[in-house]
Length: 254
Image 1 (cartoon, rainbow, N blue to C red):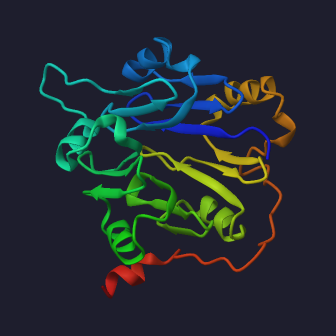
Image 2 (spheres, rainbow, N blue to C red):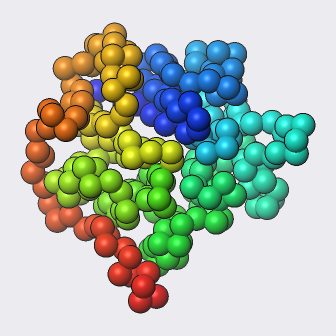
């Protein structure tokens, strides 16, 4: 596999994104506190994980520090800080933070591999309670309570994702996808496959910026941008695809 990426959609009135390559280059289109955190030096560090919430909240883990939104004058407290208080753990023990469509919600995975969740979508809550949260490699949520979960074994489950993304997931095999990123504020998405290629649906105004970044990394030939008028090659399943694309049925009978 070539370069790997950390990609994060930044929701809000002026949505944006952050993309970090394993070769050390960071590019972003963001404003507010996320922009300030990156410009202050996080962009020059190795980014391990990056998450942004619907209310300006964020969580960045680099090889040097953990960053999150500090309490504001109007009484706002980051879910990162609230999670550490509820769980009785240090903020630096939060290895992965996933924000939810509900601003009070989150999924947390700690450095010892333990998972916790709070105020997650009902279908995701049922899935996590049924399957367990310890074997999760990647979890992401999007608008309308959509979500995608990938296990350490490469098995993918999802619910209420956009139709164009669901087609991509249905055409993938076990172990084909490294992770999926969803947008909390619209129907955009980003996929990285385990062979190093990617598919993505983002605003047209971002395309040139993203392509220039990927070209500069020398990985443009390995990138497969997706658009309705330019369908990416279909990948044939490499095995039995065990999905829960109809998790609603599980929830309705729970």
